[in-house]
Amino acid sequence: MQRAMIQIPEIVRIKPGALRRLGLYLARARHTKIFLASSQGIRADILEKVRMGFHENGISEIGGSAVADNRLEFATDILANIPARTQAIIGLGGGKALDVAKYVASAMNLPYYAVPTSLSNDGFCSPQASLVLNGRRRSLHTRLPDAVIIDTETVLEAPIELWCSGVGDLVAKITAVADWKLAFHAKGEPVNDFAALLSDATVYQFLARPGHDAEGVRLLGTALMLNGIAMEVAGSSRPASGSEHLLSHALDSITDRPRLHGLQVGVATYLMACLQGNGAVRSIADLFVKAKFWETVAADPFSKAEWLKAAALAPSVKGDFYTILSVRDWLPDISHLIEEDVFLKRCFTA
Ligand SMILES: [Zn+2]
Image (tube, helix red, strand yellow):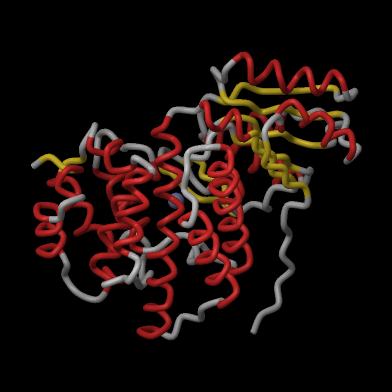
């Protein structure tokens, strides 16, 4: 058994008004000279709230960048321009800004504050940054954030598709953990019980109260964050990513129009849960009804042909990563489910 040091966020604030208080949290931690990496085109009122809090608490923004893309070259460019006096790096906004900021902070070994303004996936607190290297998306290992600050009011104002995407990425933990256990039985791949438990528990906490309101945001934010920590505990992405992610990654590689990560992953989760004979199939379907997930996907349905192509590709996407898809050829079953399942058939065009 390996003993690893794990590092987890020490400051966690998930509450209304947290953006305005970011300056206060920084001041308390004595991080008064900061570099702010925010999403390009971020709402002006969000930046204004944050800067008002900086002003009130004596925080100086000694450098900053509007992040438009997540290419590695762009991240190294920022890296080269971080002032020497910088005491902390703040990632504010959407996925790309947070990935770039996390990578830069990790490379410079500076404290990192993750401040997502929507909850569309579990990337804001994972031990990886998703960056583009030579035109291909790669997950690079990073430290976890030192602080996670989520303003529940701001997240509620984000488009509903982003919320649905976060819900989709969360339920993936159900099939991911089932795949992990499958890999243990088939291949002897060790399962970290605590990480699996943590991953499982967070989903069920949200399932019990999945409303799109301040409390729902708090539960979803907490759950996605704890999943990042489960990955750190396990030292792999196993607690958060299984066959459903393979399918989504395969789809990304063949489609001209990838959709939000969690929308793809959510549909794939339901599909994989059906193949696994997973006892949670019903709960996933019900949750997606309550979260308006199905109707959001049905408004802009997927292509069945693309999904079948992706399903054929998925088992080999990550080498010998054992999942339900490794067990046998499931294409006829997947095709049948897409056509006949009462929930799935609304999500696809021929
Ligand atoms: Zn994901």
